[in-house]
Image (cartoon, rainbow, N blue to C red; front, side, top):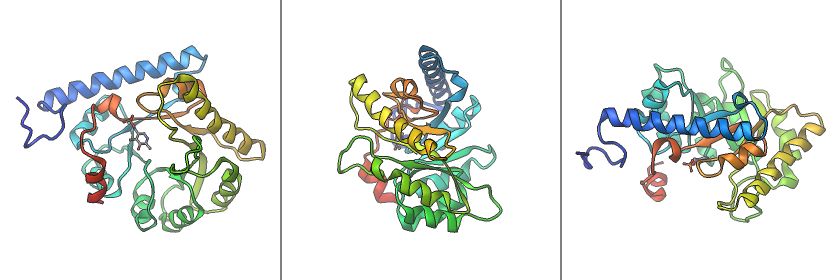
Length: 255
Ligand SMILES: *Cc1c(COP(=O)(O)O)cnc(C)c1O
């Protein structure tokens, strides 16, 4: 029987079933990526799967890593730090995918390989300044607001060129591409329209000389639409690790 006191995660029955559950779902996600890529004539090897482990325990990360998963995404700095420490034997690739507060940039700059949600120059400047000189440049995606919702974070598509120019000038960052979190919808045409906005932004940047190769878009429920529109990185949490049941307010409060 699960012990809810010790294991707050619904899928954590015992060590064996965490391992099997994560590995089965991971394989199912890999199959979805392959099918979606083939449906539009793309090579699935062009698409990197980021396993979004935020709110899930280190055992779940280890289970995915044992099945060959290398790239992991986290949204909360303190949680990420603890997990990076706890898996330092595995040489994983860490992606900070969440919103970035300016007083939390140092740890991201020192410990992550990729940052996906840069949407203002001030954050980029801090990340570059705080990136240790001995490390490879921090790989950067600019978050673009593709839904037009005023509450969403992300730079307005009209302002992407200016932000890209600013980031390109920073010595310890390497601008790789764009990221978006569209307004959630079951309507595939609406999903594709929003991902298409991001793809068009990338094409505009490349037309003026940026050599960007990364479109970070697509999550558990819409990765097929994202791949059809050219995603090169999909960020998938629940479909690999199970239902996220901790309320968001509680996670934020721990930061
Ligand atoms: C949580 C999160 C994801 C993963 O979402 P799922 O619905 O669990 O697949 C992807 N991207 C970002 C930015 C996230 O915060």
